[in-house]
Image 1 (cartoon, rainbow, N blue to C red):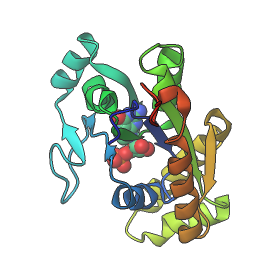
Image 2: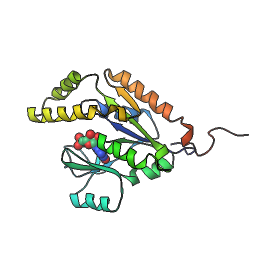
Image 3: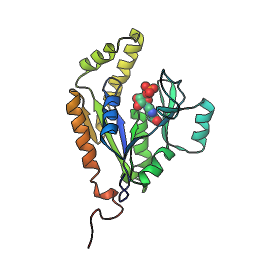
Length: 209
Ligand code: 5GP
């Protein structure tokens, strides 16, 4: 946390198999003042997932109430379930200088940009990075390597991933995750650089006398 600046809203997307979650978790370990935005979802928790930690697990009714109240920065239907980012997850923290990382899909990222890029409060806080696998062949190898999924579900995820990959230019930054430690280093350097952006400073970061 740095009280002299607004935190950034760091949007991270990438297809399943890109290693996005592993990379994000490495960043949370490395950086103080970088926190995860806990999304709302209508999907059921998977084994080990805790309400309020990985997601806020909501009923369809509860989710729709948030939509009506305009509580979401963005929301989208991903693979048949609703997912959304609450404004309350990012507003207070970025006001105080904490950086907030959003792991969201391509639709959500585009919708935030469309709605908030020119917003005087949220616009200057937005940053976006796309995590890509080195190739489709490698993506397929990684998805199959997980082992347990049925062929039909693998093919569906592969098709989704290929579609998502076409959006990489919509992001300001792209990190190719071929070798994990290299990708981790690139991500880390990016965050360090983004923290120096003068536009997000509320006051001079140095003594003016
Ligand atoms: P999973 O169900 O595997 O946790 O996530 C499925 C997809 O939903 C992932 O691509 C993830 O990035 C995306 N996702 C998670 N939270 C949000 C959110 O708040 N908004 C949007 N648009 N996508 C999300």
